[in-house]
Length: 156
Image (cartoon, rainbow, N blue to C red; front, top):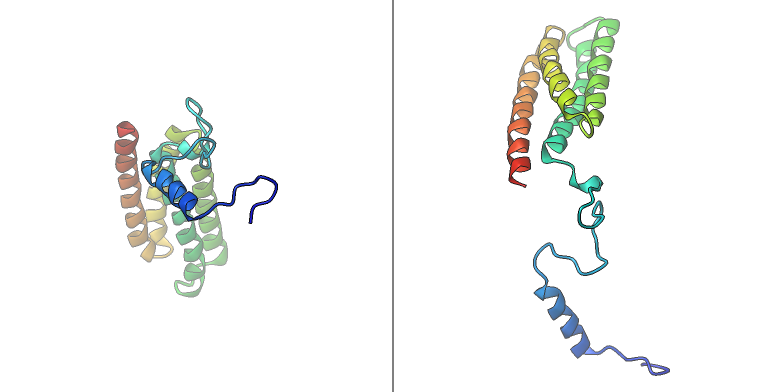
C-alpha cells in the first residue's frame, strides 16, 4: 500500500521493468551499472588486463600447486634428501609465483622467465621422475597460453 503520494508498484510496472531489461543487449549495462574493473571509457581498470597475461599467470599458479605437491612425493616415494627436494621445490614454486605476479606489469620478463621455468620443472624429473611428464604438460599449456592469448589480444 502506498503512502504520502508514493506509487505502489504493481504487475504492470514489473512487466515494464522486465521489458526494459530484456531490450538491453547481452552484456550491456544500464547507466551507473559498471561491473568490477570497469572505470568508464578510455580508462584501464584491473579487469581489462590482456588475455596473454591472465593465461600465463594462471598456468604459473597452477604449476606452483603441482610443484608444492611434488615435494612430499620426492620425500616419501622417491626417498630424496629433504634438503635437496625442499630447496628445489621451494625455489621453483617461489619463482613461479613471482613470475605470475610479474605478468601484470612485465610480460616480456614473464615470458622469458616462465619459459626457463618450464625447462627447470621438466629437469626436476631427475628428483621425481613423474615431473618429466607433468613438466611437459605444463610446457604445452605455456605454449598454448602464449599462442591463444596473443590471438585474443590481437583480436580485441
